[in-house]
Image 1 (cartoon, rainbow, N blue to C red):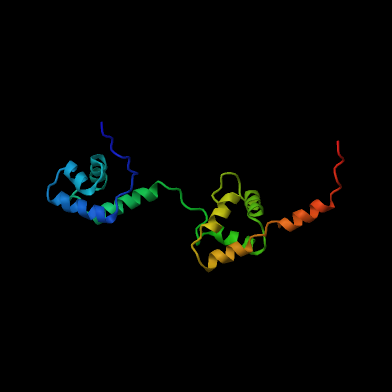
Image 2: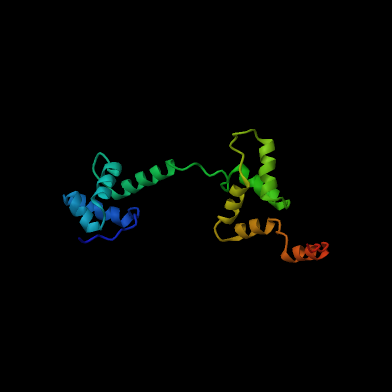
Length: 165
């Protein structure tokens, strides 16, 4: 018995959708389309059911439908660049506040369940997820520096020695 190798699922690319639109116009069957694209017939069938318009399947309209559906499934980003919270975060970071201090302050200001509350992990993710550029360097530079290892070593030297037992 010969087993087929497992393939990782990949979303249909714009080129795949253009090819699919062409194959639909040529009246190919779903199985034949799947064979041409190297995809599972269920993937092709699902694409045609979800993204076809009343006038037929068009690649650009199908891509727009898929993108819209993908965006609907995600929660909006709390710390987007143009938002109030992003401005507050930048201000507090410029004052050398830590993300933990910012999160606790926002939790005190805004009631439970309010949209302007964020965790310190969200703030760290926002800082480090910025694209490479001046803003990212600026945000990282404003983070308080962690305690250096030299300071820890100096403190260890000042501790009294443990008595041997």
